Amino acid sequence: MKYFGMLLLLVSMLLSADTKWSNDYKGALEKAQKEHKSVYMLITSESCKWCRKFENTTLSNEDVMQKLEAKYVLLHINRDKDSLPSKYKSKRVPRHYFITPKGEVIYTFLGYWDVQDFSSFIDDVDVEYKRKFKGEK
Image (tube, rainbow, N blue to C red; front, side, top):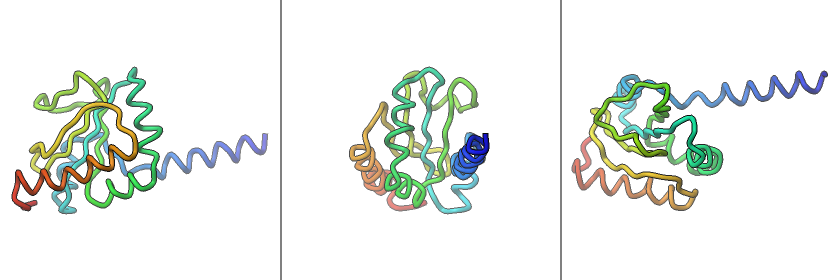
């Protein structure tokens, strides 16, 4: 019983440490403006096995998370629970959006991606941002 209590405490500490993700669209845009960052928005659903796979593999990779956290405010929208402006497509998930603090889409793509491919997409966002917005944040 003592070990179970310690395990429960450890799990709750780990879960509370993962507060970097928001589910508030407007709040994420405001935070991005204040921090001079863009927003990475991941849209998932309750019943999506590929969403869980992406979360449990790619997003659990320390290098991927460091790369995301350095440049983006992290926004996780569950289309079954959270509100999302209708201008964003969420019929098929997981859906990935990289957006400016003004809500303009820099780059978007669909589906599960492994660590290497997703990391490459993050690099592509920088190129696309410069092409679309000429380096203005």
